[in-house]
Image (cartoon, rainbow, N blue to C red; front, side, top):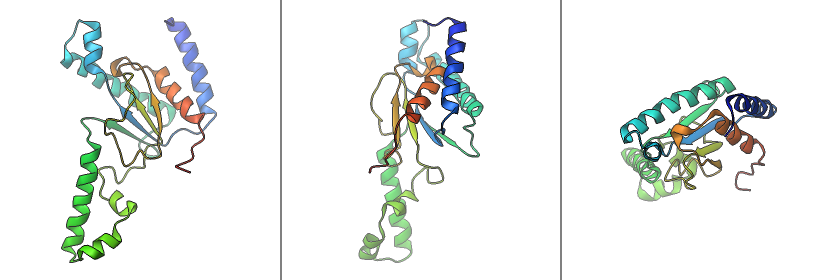
Length: 186
């Protein structure tokens, strides 16, 4: 384990490294492990674990702001009881209802269905797709998080439970993202 001095030194080194390259415009966070964190400590219940997780989110938003990842230019999306399949179903329902109200026939609707048309009905329509998705707790899956929007995202999986997530974990994720060559499915 790093001492506080070594931790700060390592954090500064990471900051210098990532400031030399482009930051992700949109970061998605899957905040996982609150209850397991609480159980691991053995001194708190699930509710306190979630409280620690909420406090960590505030801290992580501050870290992003320090890096210049802010709401004006950048976005951050957080998984909280998220269901990506239901979002796609809701988007298609919305599209069908609207086009049906316009009096379009089923054949006309079928001809108009595109990825862009469906995308306009997603919960996050006004946000860019995430460039980077970070998942905590050692789980290596999306669990339905932004299924449609994450098609070309880069992923970073961190072993730390969300309440134990550190600034250096965020910086490592960004550094990993910067070291990749994004191909967007090509």
